[in-house]
Image: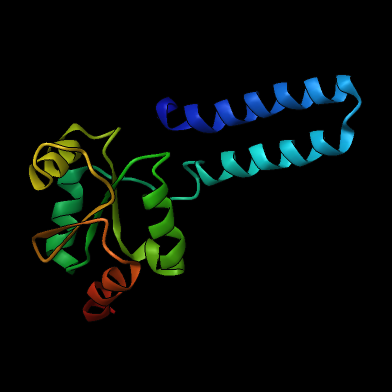
Amino acid sequence: MMRAWILPALFVLCGSAVTAGLLLKGSSLAAVALLLLFVLLAAMNCPLIFPSSISALEAERRSAADGRPIVFWRPGCQYCLRLRIHLGRDAHRLHWVDIWRDPDGAATVRAANDGYETVPTVVAAGRPHTNPAPERVRQQLAPSA
């Protein structure tokens, strides 16, 4: 769980250091602007933005029962963030698996992507789709509405 917070924490620490340096130089406006930028980057990579992750095994079980797609993702991935933001409220209807927290999920992604851990990988109806358009994922949700 701690690994997911490393990137946001680094953004906040770096932003604080840069802000302190700029404040010492007397550039308060630039310091505030850069601090806001770093806080925004930290928020975008925060694990709280994504629905809670479950294990790949549990996701497969739930998906078999309700037909909803499984999204394999990792913190800090800009494409995962793009998918999450574009899905909006529909994102909570998917089963999310953090491949950094679940070795079985990482193995599933590698098997679908020629050995690479390319995310987001969405498994819908047993077929993997690497970095699909949000509209395509939303279409996969339609039958289970």
